[in-house]
Image (cartoon, rainbow, N blue to C red):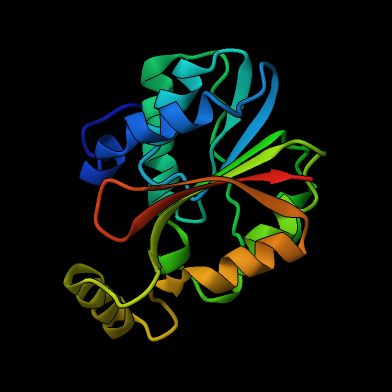
Length: 202
């Protein structure tokens, strides 16, 4: 058991703000049963909310950051949900996660804080999902001239690490289509420049 403590459990304002948006989108595509894999679960608040909202699905959170996994584990221990699994140490750029037989893939606010290759790695893994399975992808993307918020955010990310940054949306959509991932729906996120994208495996 991870053990619950205020020092271990973390919270994120954006995770709470976009929770209902994610839930609404997933209600249209989530299977009744199976395994949902979340890559880059962060604080664990999304995994907790999604596991609670979809009790027929087993929810597998993951994050390469041990501090994040401790937070996920603390939320999980406190909630005691039977369908919320212990967090795994998974990295988008490592192939291990692709061997998990998931029926739904969720990735929220990850690609801009990962190297450029992470986007293609995510799509490669999603292309191996069962036919009809979905990928929910959420985060900031460049779609036309950047807003002041996105330009400022991108500059902050690149100042921290030049390999990070907000990715253009059009190449991602083209790469998804080339892999047989059909864009099922697209909607604006809670923050300017954020996008919620739902892809379905053909």
